[in-house]
Amino acid sequence: MCMKKLVCFFLCVVILVSPGSAFVLAEFCPDGYASGDGDEYFVLEGTGRLVGWTISDGEGTISFPVGAESLGRIIVARDAEAYFQVWGSLPDYEILESGNTPNVLQSGRFQMANSGDALSLLSGGQVVQTASWPDELAASNGRVHVFSNGIWDERIYKIGQSRFVPETFTADSVTLFVSPECAYTVISDVVRGSTTTLSISMYEFTHPELAYEVAEAAERGVEVTLLMEGGPVGGFPDGEKGVLNFLTASGVTVCTIESTDKLPARYRFLHTKYLVADGYVTVVLSENFKPSGIPLTGTRGNRGWGAVVRDAEVAAYFNGVFASDFAGYDIYAYTPGTEPLPETWSDEEIIPRFSEKTLYNVLVTPVISPDTSSLVPELIADATESVDVQQAYISAYPDGENAWIAELLKAADRGAVIRVMLDGIYYNTEDDADNDELTAYLNRIGEGVSAKMLRPDTYLTKIHNKGMIVDDEYVLISSINWNFNSPNNNREAGLIIQSPEAAAYYTEVFAFDWNGDYEKDPVTAEIGFDVRWLLAGGVIILLGGLLIYRRRK
Image 1: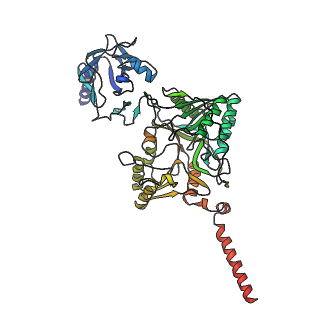
Image 2: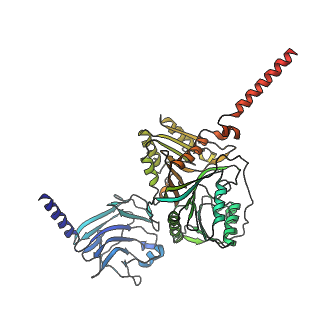
Image 3: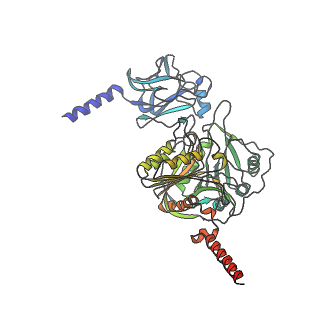
């Protein structure tokens, strides 16, 4: 009997707040980019008649024309044309009268204040949902607030950004590789093997040899599209302009993503490093297309990780990311200049220590910033045995705490062994709070947590990696730096590979760097002990023998 009363109670609540339909305030942006915030908007989600449903900001109220209905999602913008200029599509209704878009009904003056205001969704005059800022939600220019799973999402959504969700695929095969040893061979083979399409998303491209490979693909009929960050730190160097000029002249479609005086770009930086070939092959890596990041085989360069995934579903996922980025309001065709293609350049010769390795039927999960970058701290939060991190640098958040480092320390408290390896080149150690200070801090924590810095040496230029190994089973390969902007404001790309074999491969590389084996000679690394001690012993014995001989003589 009690259960029947409970059911009746809930039915009464539904009838009270939802006369013939049910809606939720699913999204809103109070501070748009258009002049006068004409592109501010809100979204109602639900199906049915809109009669009786209103939105109020305390000064004005929005209602809908008689007979208005929703089939799932209703967008109401202040100015339809201003909304269109940013989003590329018209809203369902507008508040002002700017064109042919239907108008909502307005009483009072409804306009969401940028710095602070509140919205109420009412049904039949009764409040069913509220949202306020800055008390409840953060206020900032271009920020979109999204209601998901019964709460306001903490992710920082900006106007025009994508909303990809996590998906895991069983890839046909995955080829693992590392820089400096075998990255160039693997990537150039993928480019040479492309036959129909080649889409490249890259932060920097100054590599003349890879430029030749990409140009040759375009010249043999492959549809090549290159999307670049249009405002990298320090601007475009002449070498990069030369590469883009050369590729444009070779038939490659080159575009940049960048801000203007009126519209900021959707992402702080396009910091991705991936390509998709023929709708089947996806390459994801930590390195830019630069001679130091993808060094010619047998030459010194950065430490970086990468993977080639051969699978149609994974390729479709990354092609979807590429298409979303390429369709934004902040995309511009590159204007060629006169700068020449840079000359071939390579570092000192080395004897490569690692070669690529191919695995089959492997679970892979794309990681896209800012959409799904939360997968990384979630992976750390599930760690029970070990976490190995290799990063170019790790920096504090604006509030002083790095959330991902905090997750590492929680894992250590659970008993996981934590190792963090950072780059030691001068610009990552010259400030008062960068890699050397963080390394010292981590080493003071105690048992279970240790950190090292790798200084430039004869084998590695620097650590540019953004990788992680968890519990000898999961590997992160990505472009995501451990700072605030990279996971929250940049466009980044990565992969989580679930495979003990993949973890073993990268653990061997990590151990090589961690133990400093690069300081030993090639024979030593091959046979497992330092031959130099043997040689030194031989020299000592020889000298001793000569001394005895001379004394006897």
